[in-house]
Image 1 (cartoon, helix red, strand yellow):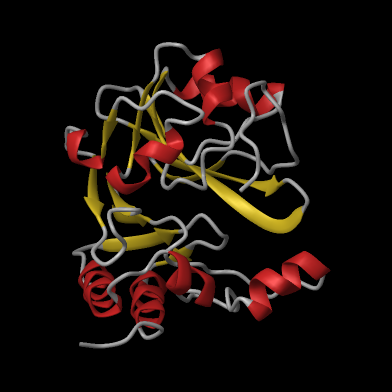
Image 2 (spheres, rainbow, N blue to C red):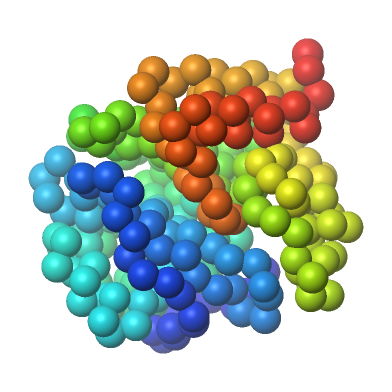
Length: 241
């Protein structure tokens, strides 16, 4: 687990990509890895912003982000995705931070946590579910936009190509994290405590009415029917009941 950044440390990242009227995505680098990570930005019903798995941005992109609305909520989606949370809390001292119940103690080692997914108040555009079978370690964020529903997951489902560098090869090939979409061998070993329960939950998410896209933290977005198919395919990597 990389050391969390207390200062605003910008790594290579892409543009602020608009996916829907209230939904954006930024893809960025991880320290020393070819693996990419994703920050999801949602404009809430009150006009403020929620950042899921926050990434420190360069000045130009940071100003673009701030122009979308005040940054009000940070979501640290598991104990391993806390890299830039302390830096965001330092730059935006009014933010409120949520994380899954099972990751709270680890996140609190580096950042203030104001509540868990159970405490987040559904504002009509965003709600959270804690995933079954992972000891409360991760969840799903469901976002309502004008074009339909988006499901945002973290490490439980990965959707990327294999990497050629040594560390990337170890992560994507040896540890079975690619090609996606899939539940990786690493995640099954470290996080999943009840495979049938998680499989059923992913299959339920695949049936979400008006599902338009699936966003995962590593790396690709699945759009339209591919979103449903991605969740179903990932579920096949888990044992059935």
